[in-house]
Image (cartoon, rainbow, N blue to C red; front, side, top):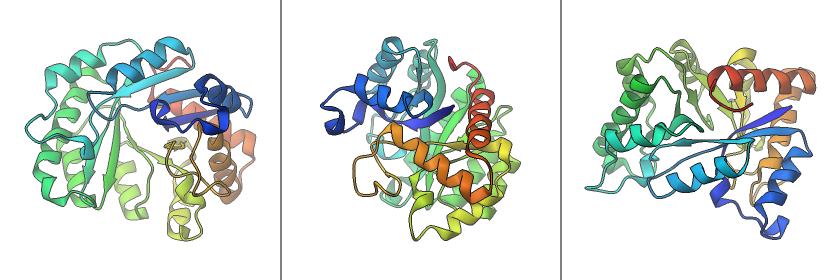
Length: 259
């Protein structure tokens, strides 16, 4: 059994499945994927991801505002976020965090929004899904400042072991995407070898970042199997045991998910 712990089902390129999300999800199920966490990225898609959880029993979602989706002068409000999080199938907060790669000038606005999401996590007890890129020190500083009593996840992890160790020490899980299969990702593979088995998740981040051998093509939830198979081999673990372990980790981190 596998879980795609981070996918954007409302954004998939469904060409391979003739425009059918039903067919795309069924293709994933046939490859052993039994649950999907559909991720919120802004206020506009909150309704869409919630609707998908009502349409499919094996889909839950998160709600939040991605750091690159922050609109100047229209930052998310805590009341709005708490209201969205009250939906029974919204099992997590985010994705949120800091991304200085594309928008370093908006660092202050990103930090304020990240703090807001972390406060919502404190008030609701729901785990937070963290996106971080070229913002290591500030991301860790804000997580330490928040001192959340519950865990969260560093999604689509691409940093070094020092960053991973710091996140693990804060109680966070580490999630790997298809990037770990890329030819130039040996440093990331070394991190993946070291993450404790009970703190590791797998994801596609579809429609982005398709793993080898699909790199350069539209990513789909069914390809989480390639990520999991690659990581199991990398870590010298039987695939079935690895799949069960990462699914158990997902259930532990997201206890409200219908898995």
